[in-house]
Image 1: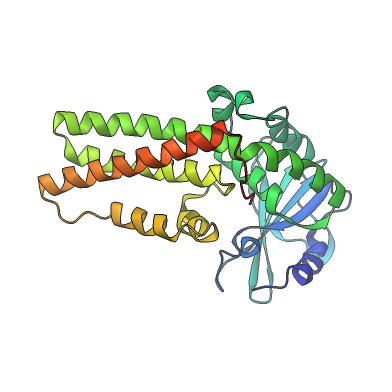
Image 2 (image 1 turned 45 degrees about the vertical axis):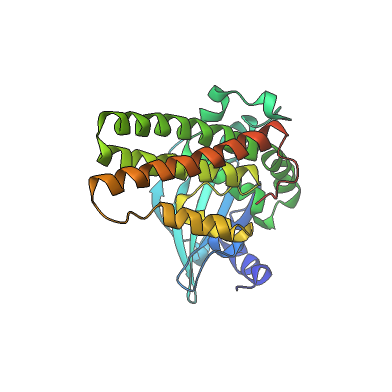
Length: 271
């Protein structure tokens, strides 16, 4: 486990003057990472500027333009830092999509789908980030994200689940079991994500699905998910039964997520 306070101090030199806020994020901050994981440093700046100046300037490797972040890399000993800089106005625009969401009745499907994947990752990072500078601003936007993001994710993932489940049912009905195998897995993935979001786990990256279950103490679900995602054989009948099993588990989880959303996600653990 890294010392976040120490790393925040070390990363300060990469933060340009006038930054609205800067904070540590990523798998190392959330306790998901390992010795080969990089450290994410997110910088919010009025001009979206990357350069911190002097010999602390990293090498920019990607410019996201007006809507996305610019990304650079820097190395501190054995830790690689990915520096992601967003324009303050762009962050305000993204967080603004979450404003006014106080309960499930405020989340329409259109509103839930009106986010790009990068925007959702940013909103999650804002809820879990470890501050470097601009603490007051970070706390302000964090409050908005922490309150609304779980509901947006639940609604979004449930919509994805419904579409995939319908495709899987169609594949099973037509005897196209290989398509049903793929789409039933997609349905289960989205149903798991919806349920985990309903419990406050807002990291939307699929690669951390098992770690989110672990964080929430969902060991039994983790085992069920792993078993349901594995096919016993390529036999037509076995593939069909496995797809149906995935859909049953997905249906159960989607029902739980629906129920928690209707209750306003009471007791959700944010992060």
